[in-house]
Each structure stands twice: as structure tokens, then as C-alpha cells.
Length: 68
Image (cartoon, rainbow, N blue to C red; front, side, top):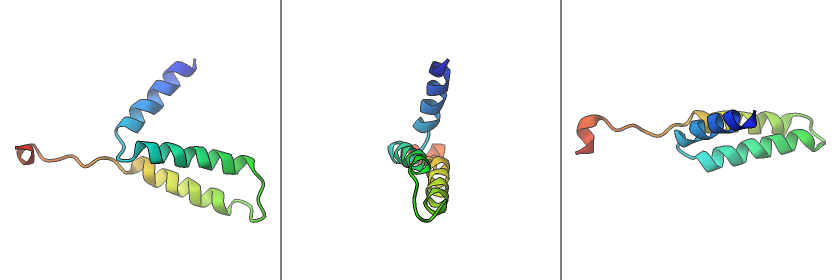
């Protein structure tokens, strides 16, 4: 069952402007959820917001006449 989920994630990452950076930030977000820290949820909130920002930052699409 993980195969369709991985395919969905990879297809979503292909459309992003910085796919590697978005994936790395998401992995770092998951890692900070597992490691306890002195200031609870501060870094998780920041990394979660940064991950959402990178996940919505898509490539610029040129108008058809600008490609010439």
C-alpha cells in the first residue's frame, strides 16, 4: 500500500520550485516532533509553517508568448 502514497508525494514534489528543500524541511519537522526540547512546540510551529510555505511555492509558469 505505500507505493501509491510515495507516488503521490513524488508527483507533488515535482511541481515545486525547491523540492529537495521542502522534503528536507518536512523530515526535519518530523524529527523535531520526536525529540523533546525545553521550549515545547516553538520549533515545531516554525518548521511546520516553513514546510507549508515551501510546499506551496510552485514554479513560475511563463506565458505561451514569452517562451519564444
